Image: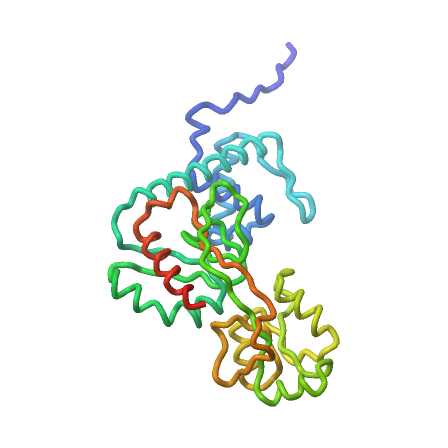
Length: 298
């Protein structure tokens, strides 16, 4: 009697009820390419990611990926599961935005993404006016040059120097930020004596191609750069200490600094950007009004 080959049954509906955390961990693992990267992204341990992926594959009754050296190759089933996980992620984000947009209370947390210079030295000193008017408001600054995703609720509101093209985002103009080449009187004197040898303060390689870096490259390409930093706050402090000339926005000009010219070397538009699902959120509207008042001083 000839033995029949074993037939593996297709996963049942009950089997396919994989939990959300396992699916989320699978998507994070594919994005990061490693257990440790997924663990950092989700704020869990390496072992937790491994356990969740084992549970997911057990529920699917088949492998979802194959490790090849430093690469991860999805199986056909893995591709289907990843598509489902991505769809669930987007539905979850959509629900979060909808719930936030329907919250009619003027209280709670609002996360604002902006650069360290704007957040630290321009907006933070002006917070008391906002919080006196809305004492139940909790404002959080996400500082840095990274562009956080408003669709994924990495921030509720963002300040950007370019108007976004995404139709899901709404942009409100806040004004124009003027940038001046400035320094201590000694460094300004050095500039007027020999513009090509005056010391400069500039950006490091971590800053993307922006108008400020292009201006410095065009007008001070041969000058010695004594200090570099991603942070405009650090550049400002270095310029104030006499390290070199810096291209700074008007809100960072300090008594120790004099401008090379009364006319700004550069101007950039500033926009407040938020997802359209949050346009009726009272705390967003309150912070937006405060930002417009603050930026009227630019």
